Length: 77
Image: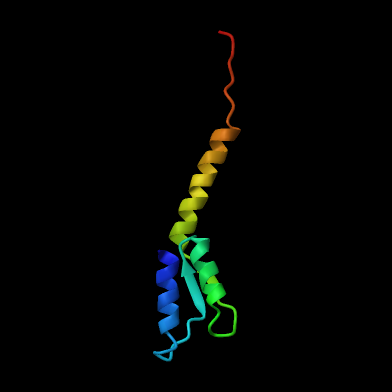
């Protein structure tokens, strides 16, 4: 659904005499791939990521890695 909406917006841009050069994404690669396949301008579109979405994904992966790397040590008392 998101990819279809983005393609509609990019498709209408030529009617309004606009050209998008940068795609600001939230990490959804399907939408960016659909825009690339549309290729209505004849030049590649640059992809930028929203920093909030990137930091959220990075934080999640770091917490998961920390959990996997932590080992429980048992000592005799």
